[in-house]
Image (cartoon, rainbow, N blue to C red; front, side, top):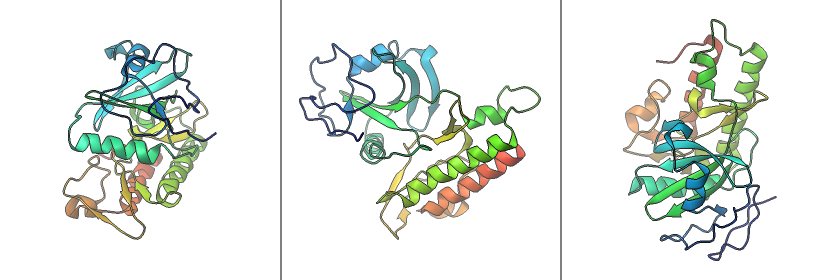
Length: 253
């Protein structure tokens, strides 16, 4: 059930999304990172109809997210990083190396990646019922379909996912951008926390100081915004804002 690290030959595959046939073309110009399922650019372009605009399902942070279908009919979400130099490439490696080993029912699973030429892509499981922002503030009619039981289930699931990032991993992971649009919802109305592109690794009992504050206005903890001091408490503050948003149905900004 675990991930198998692929060798440069790409012979070992142990993932739910098997490599499609005919993808063994010339290898990428930049060697892959030695983890998980290594998709070729050709595979992902075919899956998304050439990164077609009609397949865009989200934009934010560092890139655009596309809905894609692999040759075996598996539906995936492909995040294409737009700024592939400097910080963006580092963020990509953070995602691949840390989130690739995360297994939790309330976290969106990273299935693989593509490092080819200037392209940096992440391949996630596809969560098929939109995001929480859409269900709270989208075109849903006069009354939200989210019952109190559904809202409680989403709150608890989100809390469990964040708690696992903070306490279940070593080193811990701070999400940095907890918000309603980053909480995906499946058909059973379970929450899955997404978008770890802004995640920072923290060693135990340490905080991280950054000059580049990330996050979304209205959700960002004031001490993080003013000092750049980042701990898991920053996520807890954002979760508190999210909690109020779910209860009241009002946007934080």
